[in-house]
Length: 220
Image (cartoon, rainbow, N blue to C red; front, side):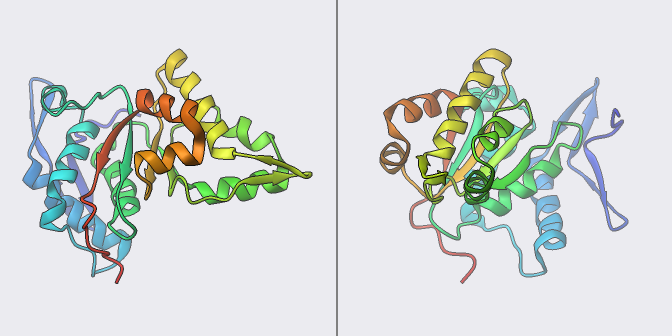
């Protein structure tokens, strides 16, 4: 179904204009997107949700990526054809933002956000079929990548998310299917967790967008 005015979003009877439609092209307004994200965040996560000023640089990068502002992306060295790897300390808001940002582009195919640890639990129960399921053409954001345990099925250990990332890399090369992820780990820790081969492919698959290491824990 084609959405006629994807830049106008209605929530609880209130219309939010994220920009203006000119010559069949939306000129987005970052300030208006922030107003909408704050309102939608409160609806999704409760009245204490708020957009923090110190996060606006990260949010700007995420927004220009999702609205596919190719010029702005080029200036900041963001490749719109790759996925997003959003990294930062525990509690800085990575998961909330990746849940939220889907809503600013209702005309795009949404991704499903799935905790990496749940995928490993599924592998422990049903085995390698799990890896096949996530190596398909669906659109995913793997949440908290790197904190999951090693998978174990019928006595055999498996780095489940590492295998899935390799499958997603093949999909990225062959069919340009993007994958997103959030992680608390830095590049060195990701390499230790998944090995050099997977880390190398992650560099090709993802735009790395990072919160400041000193970002406050918004859950405290």
